[in-house]
Image 1 (cartoon, one colour):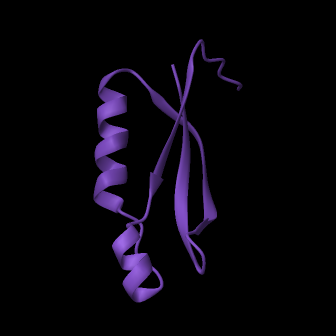
Image 2 (cartoon, rainbow, N blue to C red):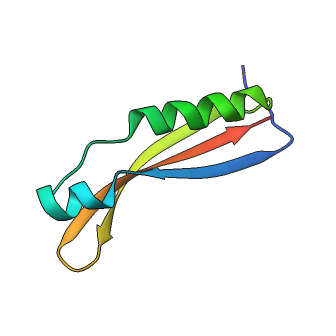
Length: 72
């Protein structure tokens, strides 16, 4: 079954910059991700797709970002 949505919204949630700078890596902010999804779900949005992207951060570091696609 294919669900068709009338609207889409794309959000990004990135891991913390300080942990990336000082530790070389940082954990994904799960509480922030959960809070974001709960806020959007309360407004009628549903998670359609998500992907984790590794982005360069400043010169030598990289950090992960979750790209979330929502639909309603």
